Image 1: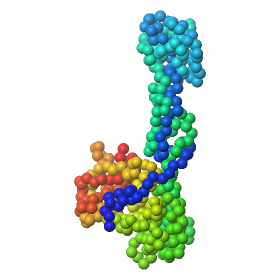
Image 2 (image 1 turned 120 degrees about the vertical axis):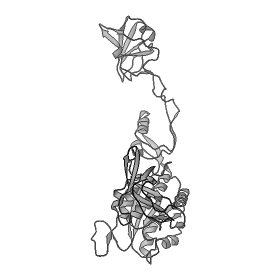
Image 3 (image 1 turned 45 degrees about the vertical axis):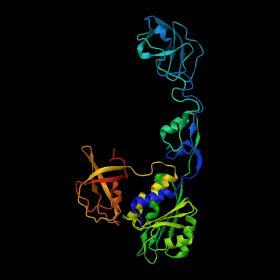
Image 4 (image 1 turned 30 degrees about the horizontal axis):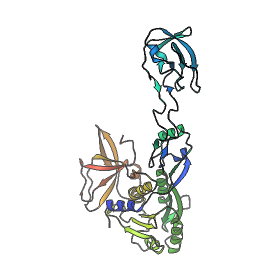
Length: 401
């Protein structure tokens, strides 16, 4: 039975980045660039004004004499008229610098009247001019493979009229719940039955990180039902099952996966909650078998499935940010397994304080809703006491900031 760190490392070693596809730039937001992008031309394309003002010869601004206004260049136009000695051209921000001019005088440093402009402050050559190519040169690599596309990247791509880009493909993640006790949400609830929340919860987690969930429904506790749905699930890029991996008479998931030539890498992890977590591969496809308790399902998805899917999507950062917080209560536990405590956080006097978000029993789902993060308690620790420093995986970003 691997340790927590060994299990996560093993999973990440077994998953690889998916292939690429070309998508429109807005559809690429949040996704990972699959190839370098080069600039097709200089940026800016021409010398242009950084200010509203007057295009001048810098040498003409050293004297207090007025300059004759010999032209007007608004943004979106250009002028081929030469700015001769003793003249100036009124120019707006972004407009191309006219020939002959080598500087721009901001309008607030001038007085204009009767067709002339008086420059109150001399300027040096190049003042308030954005030079051709000063931002980006033609053929320069502007975005590298592995970049996560966001608003700044979209702005840059749009500046070069790049309408589509290659990104790593979104993984199709098949999701299967198992158990005769389960009823799909919306169905009639008979005595002894419960609604299946795991399928929708896992689907939401997959959507949140940018994957494509494929919901298979509920497999009953018999081999035929389970086999048919597992065969369908193995057509996806990854398969996530919940329940059916413990040691009960009806826990058949591992056995049927074995019959389908799925190679088990490990079964059980030295953690709490989530010990009966299994990982297998079907060719290069990862297969995750998570515990059926909703809290355990969510926690083990966070620890094992989420990092693997992010790696498959080309992300280089696949783990949640971790912060250090001062624990504010006494929590009894026995050493031997890594524990994941659902905690709420509060920032005080420049530091973070942590409390459990409630009863840590895996049947108490509301403690996941109330948690800002998951405190990872090392296996060799005993009880956690008030004042202990704990590492917390951040689930929400507000408190950290």
